[in-house]
Amino acid sequence: MSKTVKTTEQKKSDKAAYDKARRANKKAGRNSTGHKILTTSDKLADRAAIIAERAELKKVDPKATAGTHGRAENKAVVTKTPKPAKELTTHQPTVASVARQMVIAGQTDEDIFIELERQFHVGAEKKYYPCWYRSQLVRKGVITKAFADEHRPAKKE
Image (cartoon, rainbow, N blue to C red; front, top):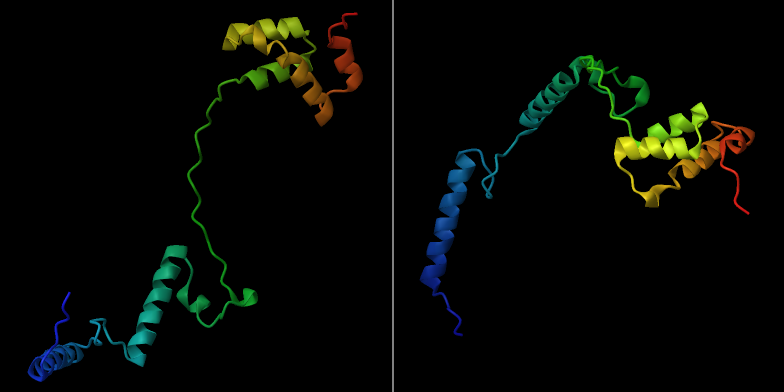
């Protein structure tokens, strides 16, 4: 690999091109990288425009937000537009909801499992579901342990 060495004339022409571009940018109101140069008055005007735009988005009076400097006591109250009411939807029953309702109603494990098989096509490997949901309801305090013992199947000895 050979390194290209610029002659003095090439360096002068490159600097002249750079200076020409720099003067054109400066004349157009941009800095050397092409960004717009903002004077202090421009910066203040842009800041006021940004505050007004944010206030419009938040539906807040821009005069109320001026000079707050982040202090909570000086912040304006944001007024939100009310959302339209959601339509009432009926949720599909789940295995858990059906099992819990039937346990609370006092159904036996066999009755609950038959209903779960009918509605949700659960297999025989899920036969423990009624017992599990019953113990969960006891742990959460929805039903008492005495109520659960009354409706639990007798232990095999």
